[in-house]
Length: 119
Image 1 (cartoon, rainbow, N blue to C red):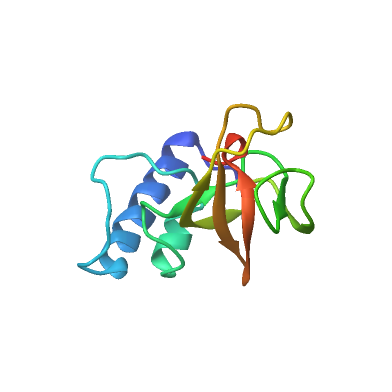
Image 2 (image 1 turned 45 degrees about the vertical axis):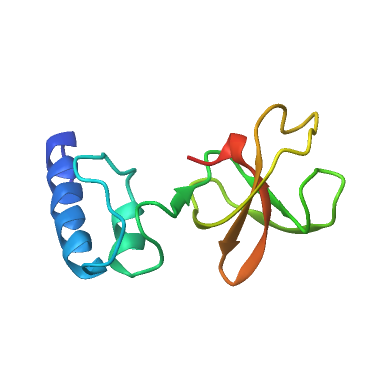
């Protein structure tokens, strides 16, 4: 059965409301912010809060330290949700350009990714 974009939007809205209710009172959530599809599931499952839930806009290479020359820990698939853990480094890298390297966590692995490819 095909679903219309209005029906998908309604489902996302309901999932957002359910996710907001299940996250808890102490979470940092922005009201009225449109979340990408799938973010509500990550929020509802308690994997992240609105301020830490990011997703990969392209396949991401997670590194041991900031800079594309550092050890590759793993590749994060495009569209995956990752948790931003707070560290920021502005080490210049031709692949990352003027974007910062940030610390993230994905499926139990902690490392650095270029912020150019997360949203």
